[in-house]
Image 1 (tube, rainbow, N blue to C red):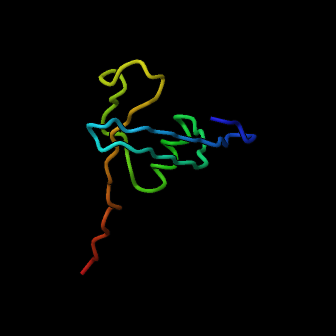
Image 2: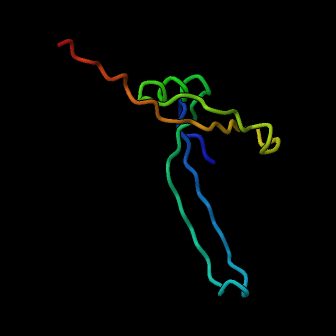
Image 3: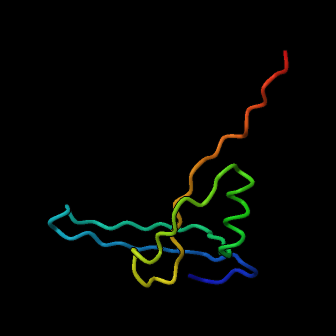
Length: 81
């Protein structure tokens, strides 16, 4: 990844497929933003998502956070008769 400044990075991925997969190659390039765990959870909460389970310990030592989020619908107001 190449830093673009601030929390933006240019990501390029180059994949060469083995003959057993048909051969050939694939290239992809896009910009990614690095968010802190707190930023992710805040944005998720604003979208109606809440942390259901922390999965990072089960997925190895990649240094990344793996979070299972679930949608929590806004409370429905009941009308008074």
